[in-house]
Image (cartoon, rainbow, N blue to C red):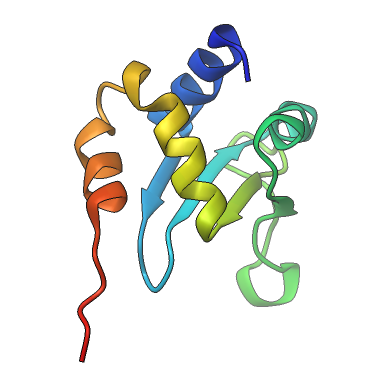
Length: 107
């Protein structure tokens, strides 16, 4: 990714996403524009999904009636992306550092 693309991904993650570590690192970006998430997918990988299932949750749409999508990236690629965008993260920088510095406990 070039610097502009890194800033773009970081901005989306800051405003529309989350990073966490249940078992392995995960990066998720939510948006109602599938095309946007597919563009980001080409930059960082992952999979784009429509959120929920109509039978279990009711509706795929948000309050404004638009479909909701999410781009999910899991595992080792998350660490690579976080290293790339760390210099331009602001709000989620501390969380990214926690994930990058995480060392699993050995038994």
